[in-house]
Image 1 (cartoon, rainbow, N blue to C red):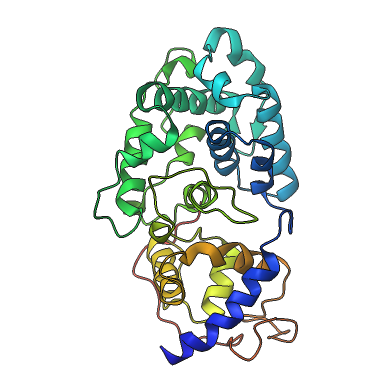
Image 2: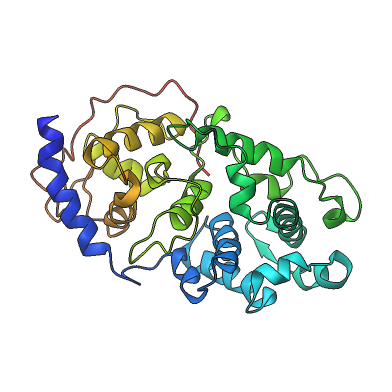
Length: 300
């Protein structure tokens, strides 16, 4: 634990240096123009769902969907009609996601808003009162979302087994790190200069770090985890370590850790080692002693 105390001021300084609005290119910036929490959660869910691939492509795809929805996305979703509004997404393509998948996603959100008042209400329905973290809620959220009837998006037919919309709803039980869902939750639950917040029924202490390539690399370099393979266990392990540093808000470090990796400052298993890393002296850029994960590798 002494080593953890040594790390905390370094990570706190790193957090402070990135806790500035528009401090880095990131999909969270799309949420800034929506002061109403009802609109913001719709924008956040769209942005989080499409946050995979090259940054330029991600931003272009998010912008295209939001432009179609207009300035009041929550009202748009509530009043969405497949026959009237669906054709606007016919030409949409984002890697393996097609226009029908976006229409299906909108129908899912529409169900959540009509039946539970908000995406937050739908998500919180699966969160036990005594839950330490969001794992059971994510499992329930994905399962119940995929049970919503979206046949209208696919011409009245049952969605294909590999429909792109299913990719938006991974589950911890399959070993997935649930990166994009955890990213969406971070945006909606936390509030600082980067994360706009808006939700009240999930606590920041219950969040799990969104596990991407950069968090994996920096997490291993900082000895935040004992796992090598990305997946739910690694995400939980990194979060557990960060919770030792900040029990109330462990995922506050995610944005800065991720962008440290995006800047290529981390030298884990790389020739540059820690020459340009602001955490140099604590990290172990050449470490190769971590044990393998028992879970399957899962990236999303």
